[in-house]
Image (tube, rainbow, N blue to C red; front, side, top):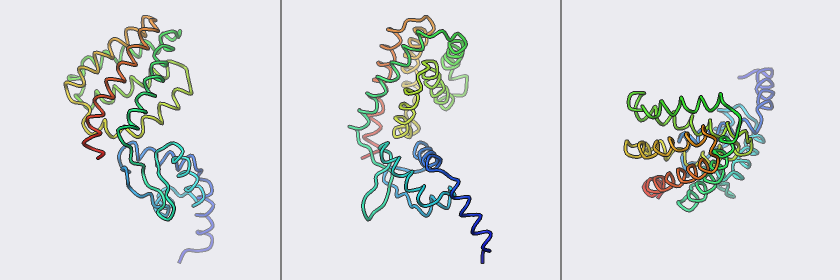
Length: 228
């Protein structure tokens, strides 16, 4: 039987784990597909794995409900939210506006170091077959998008895009990166990269919006198969 001291220590440790940390823990597992749409989120399991108190776990679940990542039902508790094609369309349209803005702001910025990094990533993507194949392209693609948002200098865009990407991330892992899709996506990347580096903000925004729109068309095909 655990000593009173050990029990007290565990309780103290749980109080130190905040709701934000628990929400991050759950969000990352949803993003990676370790927690799948419809899966129940058992409070006792989350408490055990995170060391958080029950009140902090419940607060985290309410936060994720507000982000449309979790559904909380009376008498049934919390579960990972199922999203349909309509919500996917809304997510991608929001991304079109936000990432288009980021591309334009990056193009207008005086950030030569970041633009040089963008060119290096683009060079690696152009040679993705020799750089490690589809998996490596997926990593470079994520790095490319994140750098453009960083280059915009807009913290709100970064925050919103990060949250929007969580529900659809597993679709990308499920087969979005076929050779033909990669070549088409990278043709967009080259246009956007060139516009940003050359300071053509209007062209950068328009090309990014089209790129996200093309991505929506591809993801919608997968969503029909994986989410029905």
